[in-house]
Image 1 (cartoon, rainbow, N blue to C red):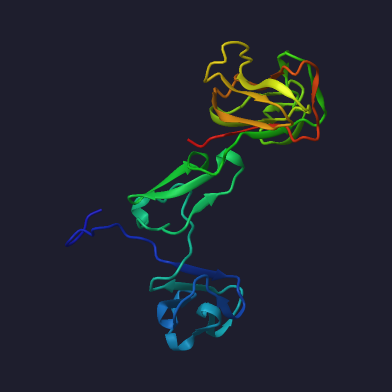
Image 2 (cartoon, helix red, strand yellow):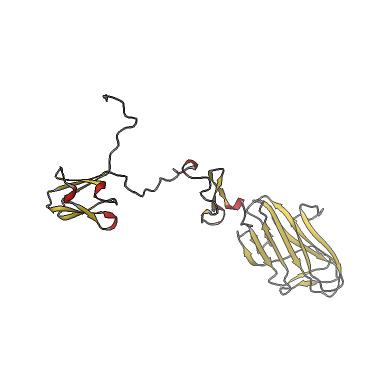
Length: 282
């Protein structure tokens, strides 16, 4: 299209317009709020109306009262002259760092509340809004479990015995098996283990408790085994703890015990013997 004079720097845009048909009565309701009659031009049947012949009022000045009574065949057009406040939600993913200030979320968090590791946190990095997994920045020491001796167990003299922690207090990811007494973490990482055992006997010349990785039965070499040797003369409680690493698919962990009292001794359900672990945040 040719122009006489200077070519416009931008294309023409369509102004805001309300069009009312099949309307009767003396009023119409505008779709936008305005400050006064000076913000609009009114046409009835395509004839411009004098601003002294109509008025606006009501909430947001959206009620337009005309100078006469409309019949259903009349057409009313209202053209908006000034900038009108509108609310428009941006499309998904359309807002970037260039549309917001660098400190837009200072002192605030924008957290998508979702279960477990799908939680996401929005942070500002030199003006760029970034999303990170909450599980990478703290707050989740899972998988985690604690199982205890809920039914008493006898341990024969000088016999390597798998300790039967058969009752769970908690097990966040169902990774502990109360029938095999093994913990098989479903998430890779470093785990902090704790084990407490007390033999119900008045005198033991010595005993050992071990947390074994993948059923290690010989060598007792760290990092595959955590173990504790003790020689006691009275009732005693021993606690073993430390860190072992799991691959998140097949590595499993169990507790073994041996005692040399000269006879069978009991780990009773009432002495608080337990086995627990939780993943460390790294």
